[in-house]
Length: 432
Image 1 (cartoon, rainbow, N blue to C red):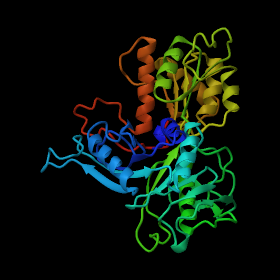
Image 2 (image 1 turned 90 degrees about the horizontal axis):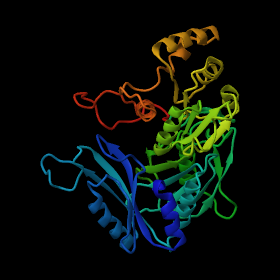
Image 3 (image 1 turned 60 degrees about the vertical axis):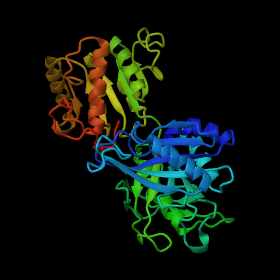
């Protein structure tokens, strides 16, 4: 639901009651990913989508029902060959959807409002909810593991339903979190969505003096901090004792992180086109060039930032995460080599450099002479982009953006016709 944060924050400010249907999990081919949402207010106004149109009508009615009953429910939609005209996904996959009411009188409303406000302002935040029917509570978790709100009915005995406020005590034993993120008991290198220097490892969350946190809420906050550190949204089955209140339970952890960065070096026409495409794809776009006469707002109206600096010096001053894409379009050895030596040693999502095959081989020789090994050089996408046959700046930008998406999503870049691979699949890494 955090993808609708700006609009839903306005609904909250206006005091509207509404219900939100959020995609919790996807099986097979489906048009929307976990976290996609459809919201319906008491007047019947609807925003968002969970399926691109396949099951919106049925989900809309379930939202209206949740508003009337005040209870949450979990529903599965899929395609059946035996009943091809039933409500389902004609693309052949299946989705599970959490439908939860958010009414002004509900004690957990504050958790939703805080999460929506943080997400709308571009702050990294995770929202945790139970997938059990009838339990619409919410827990807001920050990158450092601090949390507020409650999971409502999902608690330990008499502690269930308490509104809590947590804080982090770092220094826990290093290891691996349940989300699979590498952790430690001290500051980490920046990762996707994490606050600089934040420790996401095994935090011990302490409740406030006025309202001690339940064991369930503490554990959920710990897990959500690990999800948030890598920008992950998905379903978690608690592994400590496998149950809440003595029964199996699952949690939907929804992460909202700032847009991934696209840094374009070289203030040329191709960079202007790439800035437009990158912005369209949801990136925070920076254009950097050492020549002030070219790096101007008039030439790059779509960029979020325009920087006049030597490319390698600018890169040295940035705190980058594994979602960052770097595109080197300068075509000048004195800019390219120092920049690429640094970029190829960083854990970035994508590093590409423009040039012909001849330029590429000459560049590789210079990079080897500068000390880069074959493993580091294997991360360089050059000549940059996919083979679309394009020639114009716009066509070239499309080619580069297509390769960035393919790297992010694990695509082959081949035509889907006859490829024999799923259209939708999980990302292979942290993403761009």
